[in-house]
Length: 182
Image (cartoon, rainbow, N blue to C red; front, top):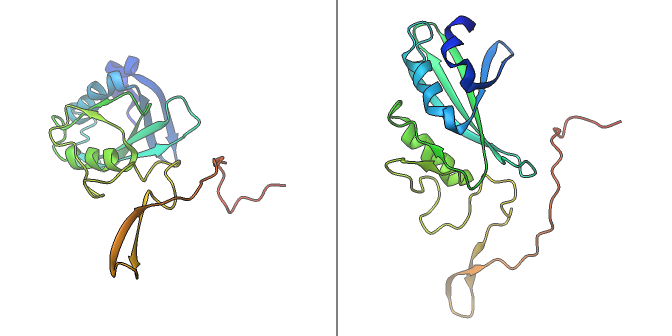
């Protein structure tokens, strides 16, 4: 990574790390658009393409969601990951004016995690039904969902009814199932 190229935005970068030969920048919602615009327009960096936007849910954290932006420089054949932490109530600014493809990715993150993107021109459900309740990407989303569909022999038709299963509060351990504790 060309660290000298990041000098003009160093105050907007909270953390810069290299993991598995990939650069990861951490920034705040306040500086998101500035950093994204700079990464795209800087002549030494040229991250022309937005590859993906996704999120990670950490329910016990104050800023519950980490929204992850994957950028690609076709000119230099380099990738960079940009991370922004936010809570369920704090919106992130849209970056559709920098990358037009961001609209679809932001809709997916909104639909799955409930992260709101301020000034997105078309923020509506894209992966779930319009009447769907909740956000299935969240770790506290009920595994069984809110409604069940079944065939009722008495009325001779398919009925939709609320699920009435008590769900215990789950605790999350952030280690993989393949890691054995000693």
